[in-house]
Image (cartoon, rainbow over all chains, first blue to last red; front, side, top):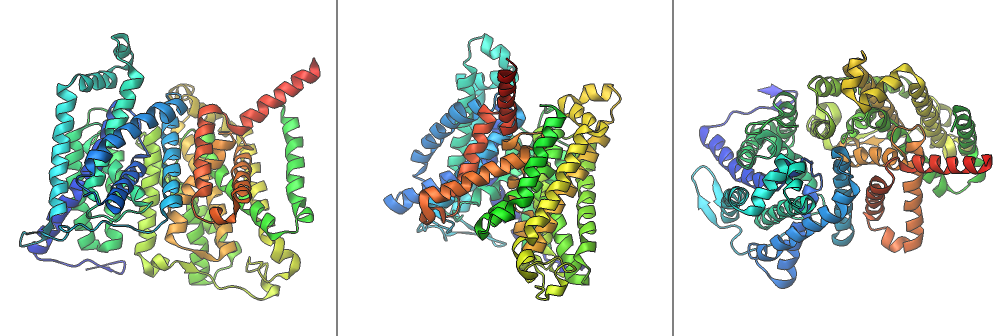
Length: 300
Length: 338
């Protein structure tokens, strides 16, 4: 078939299945990045535009821990996850919360400002060179017949499932999780029963950033790091969050898989360049026709 | 400040800008002024929708880029005169604006959601412009032929070989003329019924509708006007650099540039984008002088500063530099009357 000069090929089922399976693994990475974003949205009702920049920063942290100290990217989690939490906590408490006067659009602009500062600071200090980690196991994996899966991809899939489960347990079982949900539901009421709302906001932002740090550790073995890598993920993460339903963890997971599969099939049928457009198109269509997403409650 | 004082101020400011080439001989400073005015025009496009209409777009590159691509492609493919293609560029971008606006506003997207959908549209156009080489020349971009014949400088809208005066100042006066036009239109809009309705929709859409204002139509009008002005900046860009490619046209840089100036200068004011543009580029040049060319040549320095300025203005100056000037002026006026 021919579509404006672009061939739409036909493939056997093995190729399509292989592509869909690699889409699942790609999607688990998207889900990992989107989990923190959906948590921050669910509670703070803000769209954190700096999410991608924070991911990029965490990826650099993982890279340099490996580069200078030889720390394995997965072990680096022990350092970057607490670090991410503290960074996110401080960022919300000292910059975003202070500068935004509690107005949604202003928060969006402040987080845009934060992302520009972080991205260009990375460009300044680390330069635009792509950097990647070489680990001994990054090419080993399992042959599924229709496609080959490397261990880092399996780790990302497992990681996304574990993080979803951990977030769900945390939100439903712990006191802090309950306080976060209380603040999400009724800010004023939460304050009246003695919850420190500013603290909970910052904690939520911190946890969201810690999720990004987990994602970074799982990403670095398969993804090169460069200052713009966060921007590539921003629109994808927002698409996943909107598709899954703002604030829903299961939604982020399912949304991630759907987007990953769609993108891979899009690439297969429409080519590397045009295939990526599926993400923007899904995003626009969902925002217009089903802004609550697949699993979301009515959004405000 | 009364309208009369403002008009006098504008007349002085524009006269100074018009005569600037008389005082400035260094190419570096003319480049600085051109860049500043270019961002001021782009920013005014954003300001009409974002400042007056309260609809913050994160993807204004979609209008800049469409204007630039139409301007470049109609000349490149069909050899049309740039003076004819520019109407198509501006009109085509307004059409894209009405398309984006129709979908977004018809389905009631506001605030952050509107910001995100404009970003998605600019990304979609980015991918499209890269993926159809038969139409857009793909990732290579469109390179327009350089006109070296001085006699055709005006008809080809290229001043590189147009004699000493035009080759030095031709593009400065081009962007200056665009600035005057865009700011006059904004001034007119601010004083028109349409502008009042747009501000009413920004302040409270439900209340505005209750008063009989068709919010959908008002916002649609604003996005078309906004797109047209942003596209005019795209036309200037193509004529000056004779080149456009997907990253420049639809990448995030232009979307961000478009919103910096009006937010820092003062949202919903005519002078805001110009003030903001002068401020950030002035600060950018000063830091280059201060920290030396060695460090400043590394990319990223100016944008780090712009980001910090943006956050500080949002935190401490909600009405931007224009609000600050207004407050100062009031204090001076009060002191004089006392």
